[in-house]
Image (cartoon, rainbow, N blue to C red; front, side, top):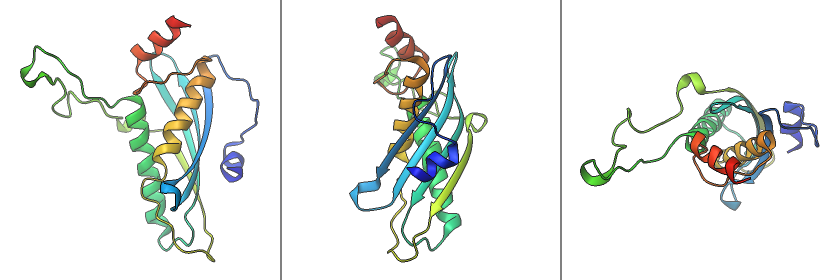
Length: 173
């Protein structure tokens, strides 16, 4: 947590609002694999736009640093896609009731929406290697949720964080 905070220039108590937010989250994957801390900067206008993501991960002894960094980056992008876009849509007027059946109708994060991502490995050579697998999935999702809450002043609890869900939450407040 300290390493990612330093990377991102995190200042506790930093004011949010004005549609810009910053969030932080941390987790250990499956309670016995790698640790990851993630900071997200974003803005909320018509939709949520990720501006930058930082990640510090402790994976014990890292045998292949490039492979570990690629895995961490991929997990950040996949998690961001889940949180911001991905959902199966249903429509009773369509056969089988599903309206999402291909890449045109199932929303995913586009390359143009991928933010700048900075990753640092905390390589502890004295430790055993820890799996990085999907270590960034949970902290990335939580950091995005925390950043949206920081930007808007309300907590949105339903995923994905679509415009419709944001507006519904804001109208309740």
